[in-house]
Length: 387
Image (cartoon, rainbow, N blue to C red):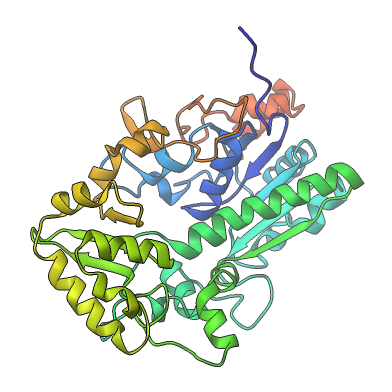
């Protein structure tokens, strides 16, 4: 049997100071791909993600911190600060999610670390970035979406803005954009021997990816909520209620798909009205048609038709969907349900190598590997600097 090569990010050492969702999920992606990630928390309560969830053990921490080790460290103590800087000498990446200026006040910011390790890639994930008039403001996903112009566009015509269940700015911005910036900077650092500071603002990343409303603005035609090409302004891209109170997603944007759908519904007369003056009438007609059968009946009827129509599944239904199951999207480890690493790479088999760590679980182990001897570790523990 052929042996698998090492994971793609084997040998990449990451110190993770971030909390809650965006940063920890970014470093989980790195850990899932083979990076060695050390989660560093304060000595008291640690990451709030440890307590955020519907039940004990079913927490955000259990989801986003697998495949990591943990160290509890008092960064406000001079010895704790020095211990972190020594650890930073052995790392390629640091990820933090504090407000701008906090890590500098602690003495562990990019400039301080760079003096000890010029190759360091130092990623700061914040709501509004390291510059600008909002840099000091607190915020969460909904705030970033509000500033980015996304929230105002999300929802149906005539209704209020809708809160998406996916944290768009947190995950597209704080997670995936951070991973992109980190890996780009790591490649550069390995080539040039010099790292970079990676400034990730979740509001920036969300706004920059709001593509179709930007197109409308560029054309001088801003669109109202629910009236855009991909927000409900056309009958061939929308969500329709079925007879049983469920929903069908129609995304028959291209003419060939729209024509096939209208034929399958017995309404070829609607083909000319995908846009323009007849679009509202076509939508009303489709609403009436889809309300005539159940979601499952429509799914069965339209499954053989190449027209980009699908059922709107609940999270529980998605868990058991045959396509997602075949792709191994969801996994269970130690009785905990989670999502797998979604990107498939040849020669790399995803695995939950270790569950999310206990608070400070690997402190002494991590310090030993970084060159601390037994006496130094004991002194840090006695001083209450390491948990």
